Image 1 (cartoon, rainbow, N blue to C red):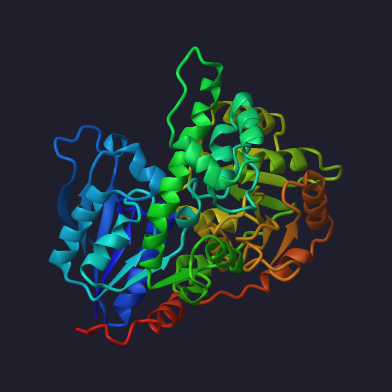
Image 2: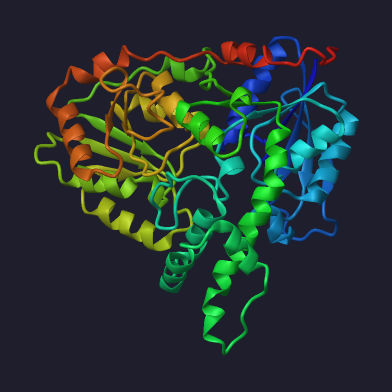
Length: 452
């Protein structure tokens, strides 16, 4: 069978982002089963584009690649507000006509939008989606509210309009007042135009704009959701959020991510040490929770020489980054080593006893968790929706209430006080193989699909 995989990153070595890494993993497993694989990858970082889109042919480790190059900054904001770019649809459709696949598997919609679904459907192709974030059910793609807290209410005109204006106190006030009106009334009022200065009611204009955007998004995106034949989600939390926000229950399937049993991480040997070694690898953004980890680590009453190694980099939050650096510099048992290439993860895990994921949002299913467990490194994580399917408390890791610094501090101290805990948790690791994952996914192929 000819299968096209659509990834929204560059798909170049070294593979860095989780989307590209999992695209590669699935592609190789499908190829081992005898399928012919083509890739469509997005290069959205073109600074100056003479044309809206250009297509370049390439190859990576035997996989033919069609690179769709364009300037993300020059695309209409509306396309990403609604998650549908009609011109992107035309470009992707042209590529699919060249590839002539029997099946399209889409891993992410961020840089190419859900126009990829429409393009495949115009050619009567079955579409699978492997969910790597929440973009089809959340405009921010993260279920993170404006205040960096987790969203538990889901996508709607009212809740999302409030979220997108609440970064300002005036916006919060307007949303609080107008949010008491029915959504139909809000949409009607938003369509009647904006107020002009010096009219004091001009303060509500940002809210009306967001109401209108969300109304358009929900009307545009639902037919695109319906166009996906099957969606595969890695956790039960992701399954619930997709179903509660517009996806058909019978087309959403819980299928935990698989790992390559031949990966070098399976060969990691943990170097002995006379103290507990904690490891953090991730983005320096507030919702990743590194500030909570630093606070908990620095408050340890009896660390017994415990160390914390951190890999990461500034990621658009300069003030937050500065505060992290201050906390790191205050303790000589904390080591910051910058970014780490994926090829060196085995080295990082070999020097660690526990991997930390103190996130304050419901992650989808971060691959770094699977990497840690595959290397037999127990995980200490917030009890968030995207992790609790994988990390089982007192089995292969430890869980603490999201955002609770005291609980995290107590968990760290427990690992220090119980030296036999780490080896016991190492023994609890069980992960599905990528070949098993692909076999289960392909069992949903429609009976009318033509095999080559």
